[in-house]
Image (cartoon, rainbow, N blue to C red):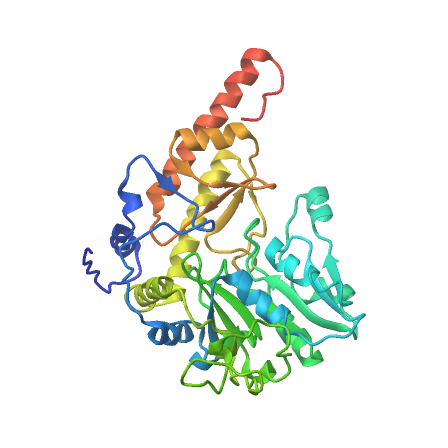
Length: 396
């Protein structure tokens, strides 16, 4: 495996040009990868070693959490499901989510409707369709739907379809004192921004590293209030285990008094090793998550400048506080635009609101300019079609 040495230099474009070299895909002149929100590309950092505890400590260092509060899972969906299935509720209690929440998050709550849990959705899509304006969610967004029987609020910190950066801290500060749990999916935030669970005062969250690997953080204060009856119990969940790996029907099931009660006995060690390599690179070579966040914001600023000139609107909140630093939805739709991207080797994701462009640390200003050039060609093609036909141009 290639050995790559990268100097710890000041935060500027030159240093990120060096980081770009660990992502081999970016050396292919025929590919412009702008789809990190879908899946980050492969890199040269993964070492296939059994380093679970070292990785757990690195994750804790990144998000400011004790390692004992972290459980490795097979993905964010499983991490969310563990909490959802551990919540104590009575028939008629409710949870509140946004109507645009990720389907895996929504389905976890909906699966508890038969025992009597009410799932309330905050409607947002109709207003977006009416006004064309997208705003980030905060405590006030949920207020009309929360009452004395609300058990939890579930949301993504950054929405994958829009880039809106919801105010998780405001939501926690408002509703946690009321005894309401906050289940936050930080999949689209981890690896792109600074994260501090102590500052957020958050209860639970899922983290995505490589595909097939997730981390569940559970605040120790609420662990005792969760039901042990609904989550999947494994041999690794037990506080007392027989040395011969057997379980007798008369044995007492005593779960570990920390987040490791949610662990699998057989972990995805290759993914754990990859996560260790990525976190080491992220924390010790690129130095600080805030530095990466700032660099991605600078690419986003360049993107906004280019598209002002092209008169292409970027959908979503305009302030840094309410918009993810790396994820942008361009207000262009249609199969023609998607085909134009494919023809030019640009990898993006089409969404209901438009085309999603998402950056990683390996992208640079040249990538922004190349994309702008391709879009300019598309716009000129529309204009030529309109001029020749004398009618409104078709969507590319």
